[in-house]
Image (cartoon, rainbow, N blue to C red; front, side, top):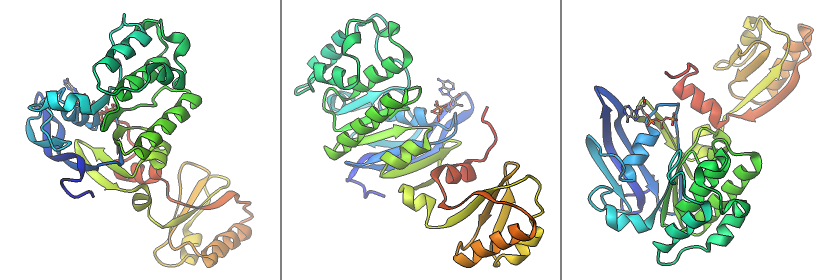
Length: 308
Ligand SMILES: Nc1ncnc2c1ncn2[C@@H]1O[C@H](COP(=O)(O)OP(=O)(O)OP(=O)(O)O)[C@@H](O)[C@H]1O
């Protein structure tokens, strides 16, 4: 975790209630300067609320927030030229023409990016004269991203920047975020795409029920442990396998026909599993040894049930 002072964002014991319900419930996190910090969490976990407090759009009910060392509410004017914001949706007036609006935002900044080049980069040149509300969802997302970065901010908040984007636009966005990071810009983003977090983030913060439940680099969160997976006919009795495996191993079927063996995955363990398969007349398909993914960690921490 970045020490205080080296932080782009410092949040301590943040609380935000709607009615009697705490959407953010004692959330504390640090986002390092020049780093990409990804906030992950189920729907309704409180990510957008926390980010919007950092952006100065909502007031906290408790706790403290510092953005580039300043108070996002009291120091809003000082922060505005230094911070770029890509909200989850909208952020651009519906009737504003894409190119004109981007130029207008650029004009508020001392040394903006070239708006023509930015539109080109994001595949929006031919839509420059189109009103925001007439752009497709993905085009609107791309324009919002352009608006967030056109002023060369020191820090950008990107709320689900690639949701709904086609693969080309998603990769273009990832490249842009990587370039921002290489240029020393601090990036705080939310995403539901684990691959996006694994690719982009220096630090991942998993939020649930308005609190941080885990944080670290993607490698720290997924750990060094390996696991063995294979597919076979559903309903294999795993008790005999479990007795043959070293103590501390686990084997389960989830979902049906998909088997997972966890433990100290060494050559002997692989041999035990394949011997057990052979003695049961089971041809293990797609047998592979892999590290846990961020999605595995995420589901372990936040559960598999749908959120209201
Ligand atoms: N203005 C509001 N009034 C009442 N409740 C709200 C308001 N804004 C958010 N909430 C509630 O606060 C909780 C957290 O919402 P928030 O948008 O911060 O979650 P999130 O983690 O960003 O979710 P998602 O991944 O779905 O975007 C939700 O239960 C939501 O319904």
